[in-house]
Amino acid sequence: MLQKTDLINYFHSSFTNPKYKGIGTEHEKFIFYTKDHKRLKFDGEVSVQNLFQFFLSKGWQKNEYNSFNQLISLSKNGASITLEPGCQLELSGKILKNVHQTCTESYEHLRELEEYAELNKLCILGLGFDPISKLEDLSFIPKERYKIMRDYMPKVEPHAPIKRAHHQCCVRPIEHDATSCGHRCKRGRVQADIAADQCLRPVDVA
Image (tube, rainbow, N blue to C red):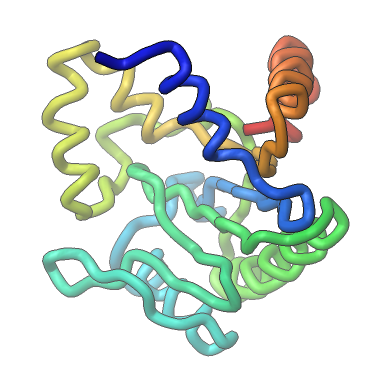
């Protein structure tokens, strides 16, 4: 039978040696066509698939395909570019030493994305919520895990979870290693304080 110490030891085993602790960024954003304010489609002449080809020309590597042999993620130097269910684009940064390095990484990614956006008349918005798009107008990423989620989640909570998955972004969560119980508690308090202040949501702590 499991004991309290088993649970405690499980969490202790996840602590990172301070010598190796790191920090990483996940940056999600919406991409709109400027001509009609519709969200970027998954496939087409100007689309996620076309954007991925542009990223490949910038040194990114093909990483993951769906069951239809469509590219759905890229990788480069420990970082990756992935997709949320409603075609939100996400940069998952590599493990770095400090927030200044993650900032440099994020700006490099945004410069590449802005180059594509200017060429194709797109608008990039790092918002926590898309207030204008209708669910029926959005592309649903053809990914097996998302299909399971789309079919199952309405049974648990009709409509709301699917809308959140399509209409929300984690604009700038910061992920960093915990080195002790005290460190984890302090991080949790910071997270709670930031979450309570909606003005600071773009720098939320995950």
